[in-house]
Image (cartoon, rainbow, N blue to C red; front, side, top):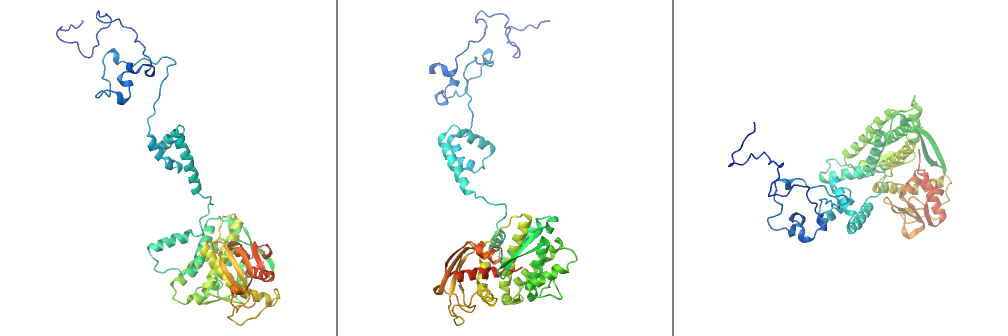
Length: 453
C-alpha cells in the first residue's frame, strides 16, 4: 500500500523528491559544467571562497551551506589541471627566531621539520643558519672521555663555598687526597685479571736508567708500605709492623719478598683505608703536624712535603698502571702540579751536592757564606703548574738569586715532572737552554736523580 500525503503538508524531510519525472520549470539534469581553475578565471569571475580574505565581503567568511544537488562533492579536477598544496606552519619571523635553537639541536622534532623545510626556500635564513651552526662548532671543544682531574676538587670547593667544612683538609694534603682518589677510581674500573697485568717501573740511579717489573697489585702494595713512612709519625699503624725498615726500597722489597704468592686485588682495600686514615688524621690534628719529620732513610722531609711527595708518586705509578691496562689517565691539575714542581725545585740543591759527593758532578765554582746569594740557574717551568725558580749551584746553603743567574733552563711542566720521575732521560728532555752548559747539565741530571722506586 502506498502512503498518500495531504497536499497542504510538505513531504517528510527524510525523503528526497522523486527525480525520475522531469520538472517542466527546471532544466534537464546532466553532468555539471566544468569550471576553469581559480587561477585561470578573471578576478571578477572568482567566487568569494576563491578570493583572499581581505577581498571578501564583511560577514561572508564562509559560503552559505547549500542543500540539494549543489551540495554534493565537486567533480575531480580534469587531468593535467594544476593544484596548489598550502602547508600551514609558523610564520617567517617565528622560524627565524628558532634558528639559534636549531643550530644547538634543541628544537622539537616538529620545529626541526618546519625550520629545515623553510631553509630550502629562504636564502637569508639558510645563510644565517650556517653561521650559527659554525659558531656552535667553536663552542664545542674536542676532549677525551676521561674526567678532568680537578673535577672532584672543583665540586667539593663549590659545595664548601656554600657550606664550609667543619674540619677542612689542609691545603698541603689536598694533592694527596686528589691523586689517591683518582687512582682508586682507576682500580675500581678494572677487572680481576688486570690486577695481574705486568707493569714496568722506571727510575734513574747514578745517571743510569733502571727498570723493575711487577704487577698492578704489586704497585699498590708498594705505594701502601711507603705511605707507611708518613703514617707512623702520625700515630697510625704501619703496614709492615713490627719490624719495618726505614728506606722506601727496603720496605718494598720486604713486602714483595715476604708474600707467599703474588699480591692480588685484596691489597686494594687496606691501601684505600690507609689513604682515608691519613687524610682524617692530618685534618683533625691540631697545629704543628705539618712540620713533623718523616724519615726516608738517608734524608727526612717535613710532613707537608712528604704528603706532596706521596701524591707525586701516586700520580706517576697511577700512570704506569694506566699504561699497562690501556686506561686514559691525565696529569694532575695545574695547582697540584705546581706544588709538586716546587718541592722538586727545593730539593735540587741537595741533589746537586749529593752528585758531587758521588763524583758525578764537578766541584763548586764559587763558595759563599750560608744564606748569601750564589751562582744560580734560572729554572723556568711553563704550563699551568709552572713558575720561576732560582737554583743555587754551588751550595745548598746558598740562596738562589736572579742577579747571580749564570744559566737559563726552560721546560714544560709535565715534561719536568716526568724528568724528575725518571721517565725521561736528561739528554732527551725537551728543554730550552742558555748560558753555562755545565750548570744546565748538572741540574738536568740532578732532577732525574730525584727519582726512585
